[in-house]
Image (tube, rainbow, N blue to C red; front, side):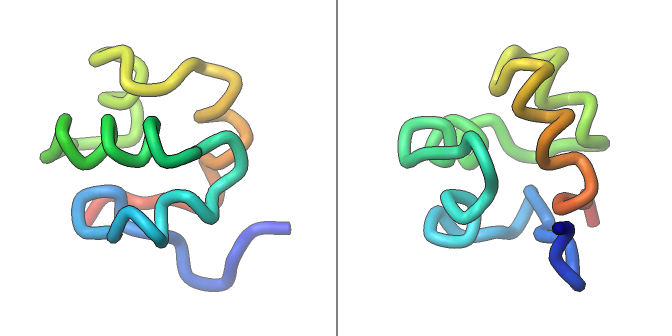
Amino acid sequence: RPRLIPIDINTASRSQLVTLKGIGPARADAIIKARPFASSKDLLERRVIPAGVLAAIQEEIRVG
């Protein structure tokens, strides 16, 4: 079930990111290192996370 307030991938802490399905410590660190993002699609274009993970968390994240 989606969270009430989506997590901003540009400002979320590592501990917030790891609460997302398919995001462990290594992927959380990769997201933080690849910031900033203009859109969630940047996660795919920069090969930060695979498409399946983005599909699973799309409703739980935002940019800005």
